[in-house]
Image (tube, rainbow, N blue to C red; front, side, top):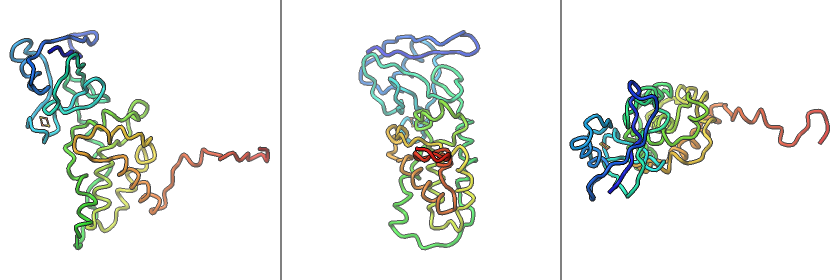
Length: 237
Ligand code: FES
């Protein structure tokens, strides 16, 4: 089976190149990459850890869509690329540090921890969000990064929702305050993040819930101020 890989070494190459390789049938994409590294080109660079869909380190783009390489089964003529919006280190290997920093900026943890009875419904409300494996697929799929590299982004906002909705949080204000700038109102609600999440998390819905919480803390969509809803302030129509 033939697959193509977008290769790039920032130290050696003036620009990236797409190279086609032959891999055996029946492998996962990660096994195919490991096969190529062992048999064809030891410099081929990619990330992986658990090989079981748990650690989140092996995400790449396949034909423009984010996939975990350890669980994806390649098809003929697939094009494999690195995740978008992350600095490229080499080939399929990216630097995730800036993206991980968004977790700190969202202030997504318990601020005023208190004892609380947690019902099964409470648990269910944030159960899926807790399954995030930080694969960065949602970050790579999010079109907002094309225009705003400082956007807090889907996985960080999902975590902000997870903690702000936790019954043990005595006051979610710090978290809600932290997600107003480059945060909940900058999302276009396109749902690309939800579509690519391998864990079935729905960041789009979490962001919608955070918008609702934000209004309870006195915030509103800053874009409303720029809309005139057909009203002419000079008295015309
Ligand atoms: Fe851990 Fe793929 S190697 S999720």
